[in-house]
Amino acid sequence: QVQLVESGGGLVQPGGSLRLSCAASGFPFSNYVMTWIRQAPGKGLEWVSDIPPSGIHTTYYSDSVKGRFTASRDNAKNTLYLQMDSLKPEDAAVYYCSRRDNLAYDYWGQGAQVTVSS
Image (cartoon, rainbow, N blue to C red):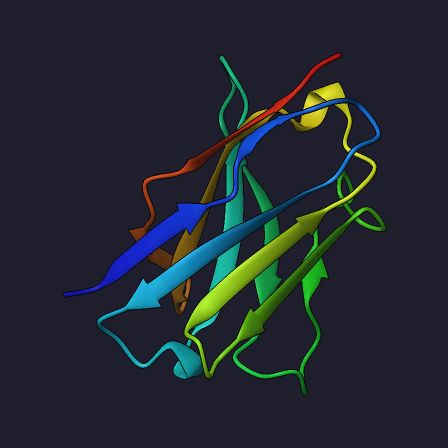
């Protein structure tokens, strides 16, 4: 069955960096757009980034993370990454990876907690 498992969350000081990983299994990973979505405490879901199946196409970012976050994928390892630099307190959230099937996010990981605090 489809599984998405995030890892790499934790506590970081403002201005610091973290890298999240999302290990995918149970489907042809290289065929799908993958997405990072986050949810801050007490807030709704916020789209972060769409990563196309291959490097030929553009990776998209929300304005709130553009220039600070870098999303990538290794199709040989069935793994998605989110490199987060220059972290701000407002980046604190649970980060989810999700598979996008047309316009639907049909499978989600369990989430990785990111806390940004001094």
